Image (tube, rainbow, N blue to C red; front, side, top):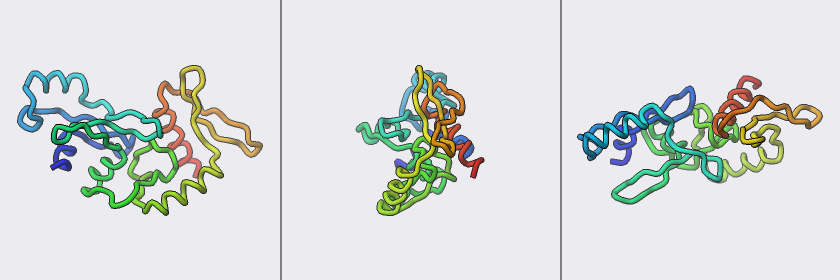
Length: 169
């Protein structure tokens, strides 16, 4: 039932890795036409979720009358493959906000943890906040940071960095 609700409420864009709100209807949402009109005008076509303190994108949803926090990367897996991931979702490029399906892998906790430890020791890219904007960077051979522009949100900077890294490889 949750799976059906997620398919009704959200759509996934493989290019951006974002979930977007779909149009809500009274018949499927259990809400009034007025509420659906308000919701659709305010939200349809906008990305779902926000970056949490750990760098993942998540959102809250009421399930059986209780608020539950869902991780976008797990919902993306469900919408793309039609099943929930059986293990931990690994962000292959180590950018937790990059939910493009090509960046996600269903791995055991041990596999994910080993990969995380290795990447933390050798990480040469990242995103920093400077003066209210987010700046993606890579380190050159001398260890100096090369800034790659500035973005209004951390999520946009992370997506740019992920795209930059994938083109470099």
